[in-house]
Amino acid sequence: MNDDFLQPGAVSVPVLRLGDVLLVTLQGDLYDGMAARLQQDIAQAIVDSRVTGVVIDISGVEIVDSFLGRVLAEIAEHARLLAARTVVAGMRPAVALTLVELGLTLPGLRTALNTEAALEQLGRVDAALPGGAHGDAR
Image (tube, rainbow, N blue to C red):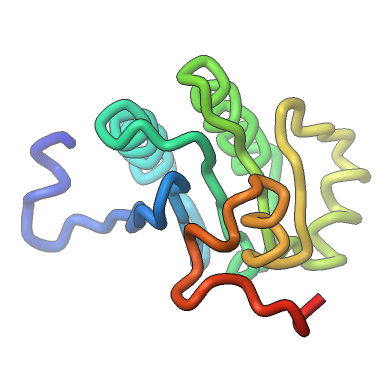
C-alpha cells in the first residue's frame, strides 16, 4: 500500500479476504487515483494472501462508463496473471445495457447476479461464507 492510503482523509476501497477469495465492494464513483490504488491493493493482496479468486461487487455502482469498464478489465487481467479468477457481481440491468451500448466486452471477467453466486462460480461458498452455503437458497 502507498502513503496516500495512510493519510487522513484518503479514500480507499476495502479489500476483504474471505477464505481464499478477495471481496471488493464498489460504492459510488471510482476516480483515477482511487482506481489505481485499488488495482495495486488487489494485486498486492493476491500475492500476500495467495487467494485464487476475486469478487468485485458493483451493486452500489449506478453507472459504469468506459473508464470503470477498463479498470474492471485491467483488475481481471492482473488477477489472471497472478493465478486468480475474477467475477463481477451485482451488475444492474441499466449498467449491463450501458456496457453493451458502449461496446465494452470486459474480457477476462465473469459475471454473477450477486455475491453468493459469484462465490459459487469460484467454488468457494462453503469456505467463504460464515456458516457455509445454504442448500435451500438455490
